[in-house]
Length: 247
Length: 305
Image 1 (cartoon, each protein chain N blue to C red):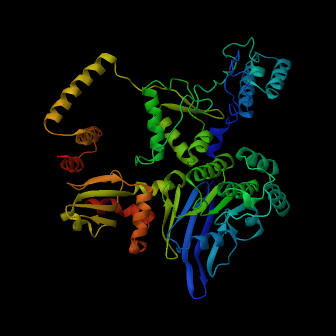
Image 2: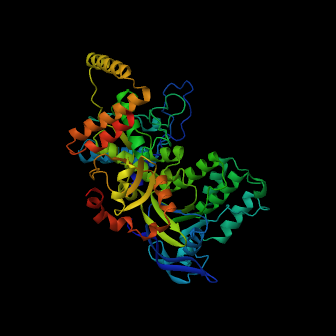
Image 3: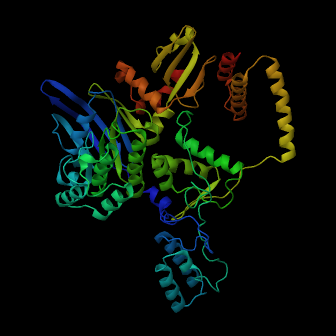
């Protein structure tokens, strides 16, 4: 089933202990079957391309299949062009994050936002704020399920949505990785927008709106704006209903 | 995996002169967590007992795991069941429980069970009667999962547990689903947290199936409309599930999709699973409404015209 290819590497960093002054952080992490297979696949490509002879290929595959830690895998690609030694998984940064991913999800039961959308939003948010960068790994499906006690299909749905948006790509047997960043507005422009928003807030305040009123009005206008831009048409009903509640 | 993990047709169970369940026709696909929701006495436990083969149907039939009759050897082999209040033998230790279960079952993953209990910090030599409620539930779940079932059936699994134990219990159920593709059918009258866990919903009321379907579809085909109370009657003949009305403002739960136009002066909001289930359970006559699968073809224009 679909779940398998996403959590194939779940064992990769599962046994990770906090980095206690290791010289090569991550090198002692255990290697999973999926990772061994990925390495073997790469070796097979080199063999097919004639860059390894039969004896070298057999020897390296045997070393790959008997590898226990990432340190055992280093050196398997010595002398081969185009590939690097497999990247050693990074140790968890900070305290609570899942091994392998720089972010950890949380859920707000009171938000009313569907669970899968909350996950999507948190990834986008982390991208905007720079917590996630190109090539970073999202938490493994199994880790998300275990820590939040949510349905794995929900996590898969969120990850599929991110993939459809072009932000991530799934690598079979490894997990899901960031492959695009979200467009960011340049800083000077951001400052200008901030300033004009402050001006608008002053006007709203002078008109007698309190903070909640301003948020409601802004949310309603924002929704209205994107609905019109999205070409949905004939959307005036929803916005006017909301504005009435505010005024 | 397109098979149905549980399929019933015209299923009924009568105790004396009372039908605990009747005319129940369901097709629950594999690979889901299906939640049976309904008030006490709605027939949840009866349906589960029929599914695992602990009760015989008075009418109709139930098959599991893609067509095996409930209670047949193949069905028993592939299903694990944790009954209400997660019963364990109080005078047996966890180790005794594992020993017993291993000898009573064709397949039993002893290393898994031991590792699991170790992770949970449940002492193998302590009698089950002296474990906490959360630990007892985990022990019953561990024994069930160590049988490596394809379908896990849980009757009110978390009703007696505190929030932390509830979270930990469900985390293990859902991790087993992730790892081994176990399908889950559970009953619950706790609506909170349902949306996180369940992706298939069966609403039972007075022994009948009121609504059944994939949560995603159910949420996509329902909207809460808020608008002036004076106009609420205009929608009375449309597929409205619940009307909440104050003097000025009315809330209507209607069958409508996200892209259906909203009437002028009204506001449409998505509904949560809890809100949806609650609305149906409050509506005694809602069983007469067409199921969402059928209404999907007819509802868009009806709401907006």
